[in-house]
Length: 288
Image (cartoon, rainbow, N blue to C red):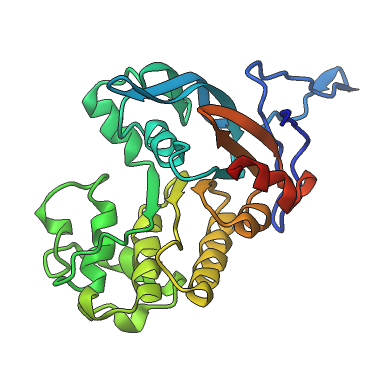
């Protein structure tokens, strides 16, 4: 399948541009007014992968992966089981090292960053995974406060009883956004699957991240709860203009919630196109 790159579709809040070429071309419009030149803004790039490869031991996962993701863009990363979607997501976040190539995240080099700088960089992003990873015996509010540990490490943000008032208010605002304020004092082990994933979203957004990564965010939920979670997640992301990268096996979700779709197959990037230019048959070829 050939790679396509077409300007991204307009979303409710903004029109986003797809940036897939490794050479970001700036072509500003110049207007002469009273001797001054005005330039049209060029979309900022929040994530760049350049010739990224990853292997575990002698087993290659993918190689020569390159793309750029513009600020505010929602990108679906799709492919069959074992294609390397989750591995690529972790490489982009700096959670695991790449074997070759470079990753830039929020205009900073992530692949060669020292541990302290990498921790500071990770504090600017949020992650929602298919496993909710809540602490069962702690309250919902305490679990949401854990989302502030990257920016404010220490025991005060481990348990809501120790947290500063400003942090508790911040966590309550995040719970309000996901519609769970009345569950703040409930232990996480008493939540349903859909409620648990909403808490995980609140934990991811409580620190006001600039980039959100989501790894199969509704894979462990029933279809109805999964639709609710996806709607909520992308409503919140687009309200704040956050850059989103999410993996999914659900073709409909990739086309409906992504502005852009990247497809992995046979260890290579086989597809790079706007969601508006694709249909379900285009994506099914990645699973053959």
